[in-house]
Image (cartoon, rainbow, N blue to C red; front, side, top):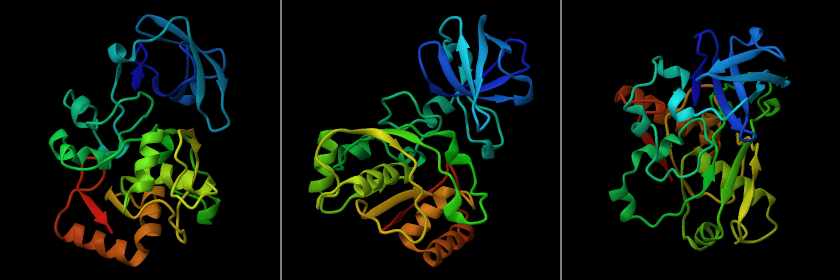
Length: 264
């Protein structure tokens, strides 16, 4: 969630709840928010306790801050607009359950309960982090440092993944989780049939040998992003470029509220 201080001078993007009173936050303007600096949201005072190496702040509050009351949805910056009340429903998948992500897994926005009722499917959890919006700036692609995101895959989902004839990943988030687990497993199955809880910083880019995913449903992504590199690793750069050329010619919608493509 994104919150603004009571005086309107500080904006905080709450990234990760560290405890009931502590949040890891992206703060703007950051120069003002040095250790010891205070900020008030909804009448509750928070203090910057630590500045992380990447510039994020650890903020400790005197009492829990009600993000539902004082925060609003953090839409991707490339939308170029503030949030709307309708975004609370539109920018949320029908199978969302756990709090923790700062962005929606947008490939899942295309599904309705009626569609899912007729499809064999399974669920997993990945808490999408702010790094999903950061472009690759390293001169050598493999030098890019990927963000870490928490995930959970239940035993039933793991079993269904292994028993499936083909695994269709709905989005890059699902792909990253399944491929992270498959990379660490020493088994002939796609993934071990047990609960999997952890964090992944896997950066999938060409060349890459996929172990768990057979097909990918994904939106059209920003250039120079880790997401489009994952898609290129899956389908090949030439095919992806041709798909994007056709999407532009046919006036498809791009990014979070845009159209999607199925890669087989």
